[in-house]
Length: 74
Image (cartoon, rainbow, N blue to C red):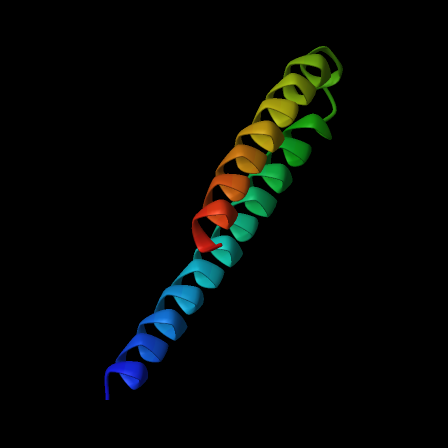
């Protein structure tokens, strides 16, 4: 009975971790889409540098949070 309980906890935690990673990927894609939509506007040439810097910061922060969550899963 104890072994079954431990297995269920492992399944629940691994499922929750995978859902968290999927959610972070979806949020990252939505942020990229919004940034790229702003960059593709007609008068957005002066904003491309700002948006690319923001995009690189978003990518870096998502990488940090995803690597942190993956290290928690191990």
